[in-house]
Length: 110
Length: 117
Image 1 (cartoon, rainbow over the protein chains, first blue to last red):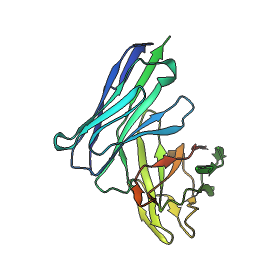
Image 2: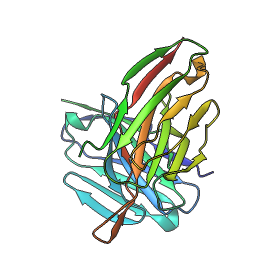
Image 3: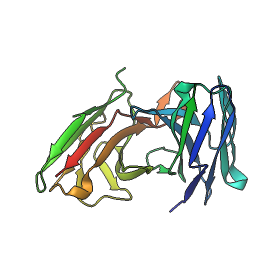
């Protein structure tokens, strides 16, 4: 199956700092999503981005499908950004059989 | 819309007991999936369904059973609970057609925290 590697595994920031999270995957994919798991365990879909670039407020994501990686950018971080960020991929498009990376644990200190 | 709902939120079982985790979605999604999340790890796929009456195995299906009699519901059954099944279980749904466009984003329920003693 597809292997998904996320880096860094842990990241500690001061409020207001910017960060870049990386996701490498071992095979071509037609579905790539970024999720945020908040400290209460809820998984929130941030981006559906099998290729290209998207932005949503302070967050943006870029996937370079030909080079098999995706980046999640967080600008002007806030304490509410804390949690675990997961990248998940699938060879098909459906989203029903996602393979997850192990996540990046982000802590934003005030 | 309530989105994806799961019950119960917490459950403690003894080894050998059986139970059913409930999952429902009201977004008219075709696809539904069950994942488990163990401490410090990402989610792993247990079973999934691409429509009513159709189910298939994921990465870690042993010890679990599913059925999909309606589009809305996708229960997960633990046949004989074991301590190795202690985990947080997430149900998710995806794939809908809205105004001529397909949406492949996956939406997750709040999770069920299961402990098997």
